[in-house]
Image (cartoon, rainbow, N blue to C red; front, side):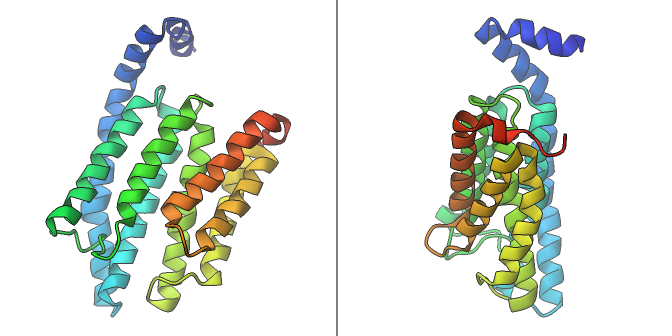
Length: 243
């Protein structure tokens, strides 16, 4: 309680408050950045290797590795945003570092085969979209829940979708089973932000199904737009359904 009161009083002076918040968040950011690196370069690689041993095509194995990063990397950090972070700068910085880390191999041709595909840069879209959503929506809702919900659709909802489809089809395909899985995962997440949150879960699932725009862009964009409109136009419909 004392810590929260201190942050509230410091916030009356924006520059001072930001410095205090960054100092508070820095250890968490460092640990979570190391966690994402561990997930990306160890756990995702193990998932890829396990898939290859079980006879999955190489690209299917790459897809498994990528979804492990979605769920255990982007998802875990997203759900911790409202719990440990006080400001938007360090989450954005983390996302920029990771975006560069996955973009450079596409430029050099030295890809991390267990989660990168030479035919697309979807993982670059993922890290970049994650950072932009976390940063921009914080200015509307500093509790981070407005950002966390669409980030979890993209991380957990789409992550489960990809795994279900990969298990069934052994390739990247927009099968209905994956869409149903995403909806089942996303609706309880959206309920945190009430009936508008549930609507955003449905719309995010539909946006994932469309084949034109990369779902790492479409999902957070559609969900965020829905939630921001709800925040300003129908705040009474955004009360958590969990009490």
